[in-house]
Image (tube, rainbow, N blue to C red; front, side):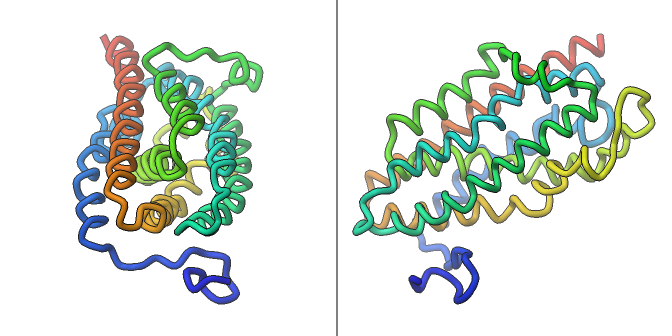
Length: 251
């Protein structure tokens, strides 16, 4: 077991930021905040989102959730050069967390079901181009990019923003309890609860792995930075589409 793992616990040890990783994190935080503070999620968190808009988002974001384990599998296939810094740690982390994301997928289906969306609707969904762009980007970067770019776009960008907004939405989800077409219970909010309370660790771990994979390589650092920035930009594009539906619904 390497020194980067806590003894007897298969968790990555988080180390203090270096100067570059601190700057990396701080410069990307505003892009992440554009998602976690997006008016769509603010409406969702305070109970003002229409049921139509809520369902629209749950339905059309489903492919992103459904594909997440596969995207991580593509990244795992790149983790083969074990003599390079961070590759073994990244491989072990991906193997462990692919199983976690598969469980999350089942919970997301329960959440959608609580809002009246049937499983066959989820499986047949074809998101609009503005929402599907994030899926295409992640498939592309995980297929054609480097290992660190895959991790940066998927596990840092997407999970970082998702953990933030999930926490806010979880606090206000019971505003929808009285709606006759909505079922809020332990099972249907498991996905939201888990991401609000636990997934804040995933982006921190992803950042730790990015630090290990990049080392002193400035080119890899730049690639990782752009992968996070682009992942967040495509995520925001999808939210803008959802918010248009909300605005039209409120006219």
